[in-house]
Length: 301
Image (tube, rainbow, N blue to C red; front, side, top):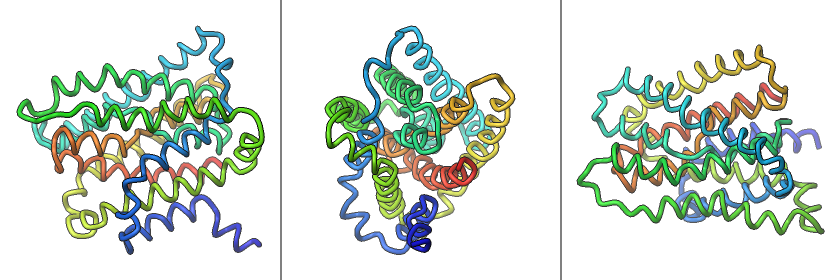
């Protein structure tokens, strides 16, 4: 029983997904069209205990949304783009790829991780959904000022990705807040999230296996930038907010909202709007973010 529990440990599952994706990509390629729906399922499970009455009072919810916007777009964008500017030519496709990371919404895994590690799930859910709505303004700005003018752009697909991964789960979860299904989700919520995240990691690593193994040099500089950001700036940020008078549970959420982006979304959008090279930073993010989340899991038990 102890061995089985260790095998099902969250960090073990994530490392297994990473190794499996590097060794065997056949199933990853086969299941990659369904990755968006796995994300949607994970978000639905996470939001199943969230009730709309928790939005009250409205002033408190608006404050949560503004914090989410500041941390996940403004502060994240300033710090990451400063690092990218130091290491990369500002007009390069790789540099543009970092803009797409900045413009992507908060990561769907923020809410599940908030639940798993004792954060304020109500706060994180409001902040993530509210900050995701802002993407409706952010994406057109990126389109106008960042992507190459000659690019042929279909704005419908990125909005579809956002809708399926964030807004549809919010609607479906409204029907799961009571009854037998809600009890099932409540009893096994952590395991559902773990398995979903395992599948997402395996798919993301697996479909990029060739790039990681054969063209790792293309990933190296973005990985260095993102490693310094997540493990350097991220750990420094967490130490700073630990000294500020903030609710203990909120400190977990602040860290996650500041650091975690929806990198599947940024990968899809950068590939569609600016080409394969611009998508490389998002592929690098999938690797570094996975390692950071494993580190986060081990330090927030």
